[in-house]
Length: 264
Image (tube, rainbow, N blue to C red):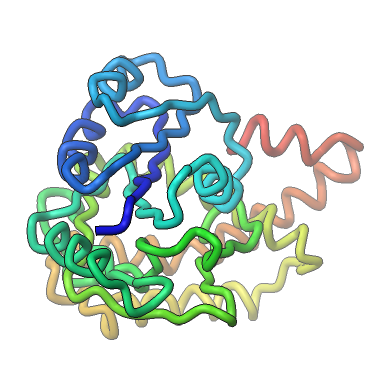
């Protein structure tokens, strides 16, 4: 089996990080952890793993975080596992078999989500979680970063999903949702977009129906309905926050630093 670096990032994840690291410990020759100054004992848990190395990291966006973790990895092959994810036995076995004789340069997997006590039908868009590190690139979005496999490299599929323990607490979800809308508004503004009711409100309507029908959230009871509604409302809120950025920009020349410090 090819030597493997497992990459993860942490910030006060003491309640989930042990499950994540236990699930990949037998696969990893090296565990690369970027920690954004955790204060809850997360670092002490990471230090229990002999093959782990932990780096201090100032968060500058998810794309930068993944690039940084990749750069710090010492092996050609990298596996990305978030602090609230788990590689179940079937996926671990598939990764091991794949690395015995890889036929592609990167391998995508779906993410199976657990929200508010229920494993959801809706899954995240497949992303390359296992790859030769030179095969991967990311855009510079603060959130919703696009995972890409460079054109000169090939992509395969893993049959088994990675399991994501997303949210048990509604307030935790809403807190992150508020920060993600602020980050998305900043990304849109940086890209030169301006507020538009037709664009963002119709995008919200489309997002609701896509989540609820196409991704089968309709089968997930109140959890699925709530998730679909919040996915739809996301875009009108982004529009409103872009309008707020317009106002703040006129009043404060350092508005972008202020926005990042106070809203993200």
